Amino acid sequence: MLRQKEAMSYSILSDEARQQLEQERSRLSNDREAIIQTAVQQATAAIDFALQQLNSLLGDEPMSNGHANYFPESEAVVQPKASTDQAVTKSKGKRGQQKAKLFDGKVLRPEFEGLSPIDAMVQVIQQSPEQAFDAETVIDAVYDDFDEAELPKAKRSVKITLVLGVKKGLLEKVQDHPPMFKALAGAAQGNHQAHNTAEVSEVEPDEDEPAAATEKPKKGSKVKAKPRARSKGTAKQSEAQSFDAQNPKRAFRGMEPLQAMINVTATDPERSFSTNDIIREVYGEFEGAEMARAIKSVAGTLTRGMRQGFLEKTHTNPAQFKFKTSGEESRSAQEQESISA
Image 1 (cartoon, rainbow, N blue to C red):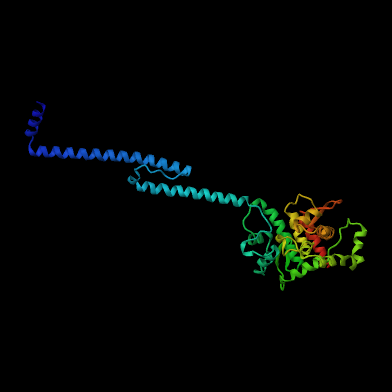
Image 2 (image 1 turned 90 degrees about the horizontal axis):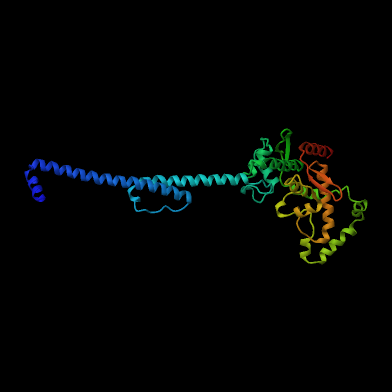
């Protein structure tokens, strides 16, 4: 009965009315599908966005949920953001590593590989002979970045090296406060090896050594000839283990003995170093029979460093030395030595 009524009502409609109703029905059906699709897309996009952010924070790969093709633009925006966040995190990590880096006076920039610190500094200063350099300018040119808290230690180490450059005739001090240095006209870096040889021959005995110890060299060639005769009669291995004041560890190659010893004490200015400590740090291991000669040589060099104002003696028996932090006394001692020379 119902079907008959529907058929009758449909047959009553005019063609125009029937066409309008069909158009309306088609429009509503299309709108319904569009609304459903839009709602699904919006909900899926919100969930995808939340998942991608969680994945980026957890460091996991984004999960495929079957709806990624609906919103290619949303993914294109989110992914660069995640990579940017990672880049920022990495850059912060690098800066943190640079800030934590400690100053090491023996580790130079790659372009100075194979040079000693004093050679590298002189080379930098000689490239601009008219310019006066302070310690901080030399540090920027010779060393890589390090923790700012290490700057005072770096300045102290570099000033010591520059003063030694003045002693060698490679540099000249043109100002005291703050100390400024320039290349000395006509100076050649080759002079520095000859000065090293002279430096070793001028080793002074420690003032705490007994008189008998200072008289031994006067008895002369016979005493010195014995170790030489032994070294000729022994194997080459024994010669390699003998003490040589001009042959420090690889890290100090190119430095004179006093400079190497000052650098060791400057790395820990609060510590007192015994003669044996300095021998171990600068020269390492060698034949035990050579220890007495090594102690005499190193003690004389440390005493000279004390007289020049670079070191101070903190204990007498046994003798111990530490780095002298007063730059004024070092400068006055340096000037007095140059006047007496």
